[in-house]
Image (tube, rainbow, N blue to C red; front, side):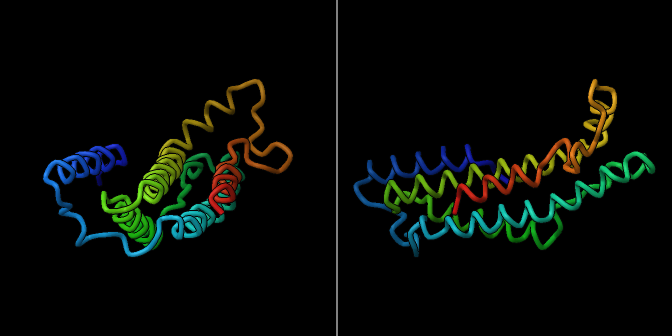
Amino acid sequence: MRGVISYAEELARAAANAADAGASAFNASAPALHAGALRPEIAALLARLAQRAAPALAASLQRARAEWDQADSFTVLDEELEHDVAALRRRLATEAAPAATPADRAIALEGLLVVDAAIALVRIVERRLAALLRLRLRSATPDLLPEGRPFLDLGLALHEVAEAWR
């Protein structure tokens, strides 16, 4: 899957080429709706990530002390969520086409960035939770659930980003 920077570079080149040619080859693929209408969809996806991450991470951290070999069995992204992420990324990429208004393109590109960053953060935690736990347990404050909340509160972070997109 290509990253947002690749999309941005490709779209910028396409816009420049279309302007040089004097006609837009992208008019046939003009966005069907304003990218601003996708803000609630972006927020909903981020909220789903937060709702899945919070309880899964808390459960993993509770297991970590008793069953160390299961400490990194933390999973947020499943096949259905991966499918929804891919579908939203495709819609955002379509909205970022050169035929869109600059404001719509900006929102779509920003949406691609936030979705990619959120997914990358979730994947890092999924893949490196055991290492993060080892570092935390060796630190001066080894509590994994201070005040009942995960020391690494991925769910809260994703929830805050989702709220910013509403």
